[in-house]
Length: 376
Ligand SMILES: *[C@@H]1O[C@H](CO)[C@@H](O)[C@H](O)[C@H]1NC(C)=O
Image 1 (cartoon, rainbow, N blue to C red):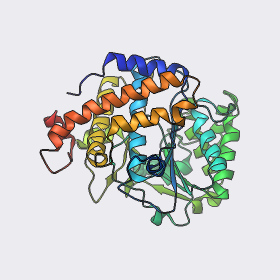
Image 2: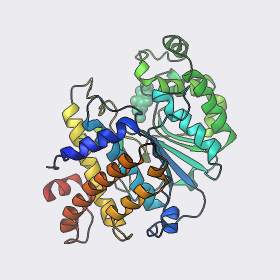
Image 3: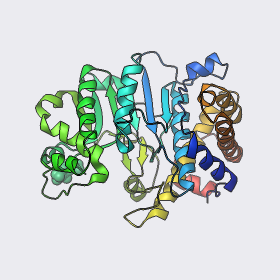
Image 4: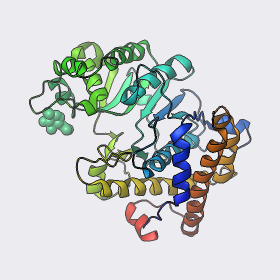
């Protein structure tokens, strides 16, 4: 079994998240190289890709939830470091008129305006784990497309706000279409409930679907697409077979394996409905979901550890460097930031040591959860 997180780390992470909650990890290997912290194993030229992921701006009601959030951030940070991608990982609200679940729209627009050097913006919800560290988006195949997203055209056109598409992982290309599209979604985001529900229900008319305000950002995106599908369709690539951009954790659990193969690439495990921050899981399987979430982190962390360990110095030093850089310095509570970053680094480093003991003895990475389970 996965060791229980040490209490002090949870406390530190909670304290950290309860107040400062502002870190922008422009954590590119380019920057690290400037600071003398190794180089990427996957050197990139253009096009530039930026990952954007945000966590709640307020502390979680269920305190280990804050630590889970941080695990998600670290997972994205490791991925970005491995592939030399830029990353914004933050708990700040980008636009005060777009809070809560609309923050993703706010951040995508902010990144669009402030980072014109970026060609691709990859939004990833925080209740996710990247479980295939070496997978890269096949950007060359997305020629002429401006939004790559999991979706089902039939359900989308029926106006099914749940099954039409999923806004948990979205890859946007920097084009005028991106800005126009997100501006339309943002306009919906500024309408308060219950008026918003009334507007959206005009488009979300699938017989089996009932409007769910908990999915309102996703519903708004579905609505905007459906309202003018002929106009938007040439810009949108709905992916649902070739690449599992946004795997549903229950599907992966049923398949019983985290391994990817040539026919279907599992990239991100999405813990939708799990409610890691509140534990208010409507499906009554919080414990199973939490265990899967931790297992996904551990699995990916094992692979990252193996791949990144050739990038000296190792994680603890890397994180200490982070703590001394603008990530923490620009923060009102710089001291807590340094403590929290270092505590999570210590956890990672300890796990890395344990894993190295297993991994160094065999030449292969763990390729399935079965192997991970038997090693632990
Ligand atoms: C797409 O949606 C339609 C209508 O809801 C459904 O019948 C079909 O099974 C869905 N296809 C996939 C691949 O999920």
